[in-house]
Amino acid sequence: MDNKITLAIESSCDETSAAVLRGGREVLSLVISTQIPVHQKFGGVVPEIASRKHIVNIMPVIDETLQKAGLSLSDIDQVAVTYGPGLVGALLVGVSAAKALAFTLGVPLIGVNHLEGHIFANFISHPDLKPPFMALVVSGGHTSLVHVKDYNSFALMGQTRDDAAGEAFDKVARVMGLPYPGGPQIDRLAQEGDPHAIDFPKALQEKGNYEFSFSGLKSAVLNYLNSMKCKNLPVNKADVAASFQNTVIEVLIAKAMDAVRESGCDTLVLAGGVAANSSLEGRLREAADREGIRFCYPDKLLCTDNAAMIGCRGYYQAQAGIYSDLYLNAVPGLAL
Ligand code: KG4
Ligand code: ZN
Image (cartoon, rainbow, N blue to C red; front, side):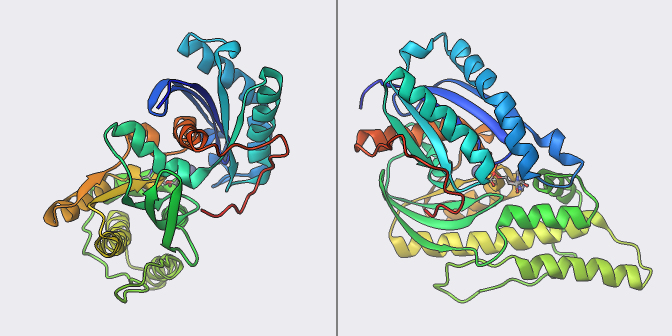
């Protein structure tokens, strides 16, 4: 381990973020400039607007981050940046800024996979956490079970065939007339509802199947709302939110616990924006406790998109000599 100073940049979706880390796990500063209010009136992220906002925000966010850390550009030893997956125009802003900085400062550039970054947020929140472990990554764009064998060795156990868990939250919220992003809205509403009020379907329930599918569940919620409307019956939105959320959580817990057992790991790690869900974290912890499995999840601020997790991932890549050159490009469909 060394105490290299990493400047990290994240711009894959609707957050412009920069962070400065000392070594792999000490965050000296983190700035997140969110565009959520801008996209809210459109009911979701508008890619063209996101790119334009990133262009405006990126340098002020980097400046503010350095200022908060009490450092200047000349203190930076390496630059880490998200190059995928994400929105191509949004990613390009971060990648271009990172390349320009690495080139002008004469320091190494490290291209980071956003999903690996989400997993690595846990190393910041849990200084003693070490691989191997099983990671459940639940974000707006992905739902995956990843066996983290070592800092630079991952095996994908399974992922979603259609909608990601966060995407399902967002789409269900939208049909219920709730603002974007829907995850936190459903989370809040679900606390007032009965999770067993409505029986929604669960897909791909066979043991040993680590794939997910949430589009059928999303359609089932829509069908339920339409049928209530046709019958002129009142809808208890809190019950719909609670029942939907409970169905997602039960699927995630069952598959994550099966996967951790099969891998022989003694630790389960939660990552991604949906990790901020108040019920998911508590119920996964209970399930893990019952089987003597250690359970970790990141601080709330580090669950959703941020550059600190990218800096942490970048640090461990650099330790293994995994750098990028100045031909680094955005890869919107980058796989794990
Ligand atoms: O990881 P993230 O910030 O962005 C992506 O990489 O996709 O995740 C954003 C997703 C959104 O779908 C959002 O609705 C969901 O995470 N989310 C939540 C909660 N907070 C954010 N979902 C459920 N409950 C929450 N409290
Ligand atoms: Zn993300």
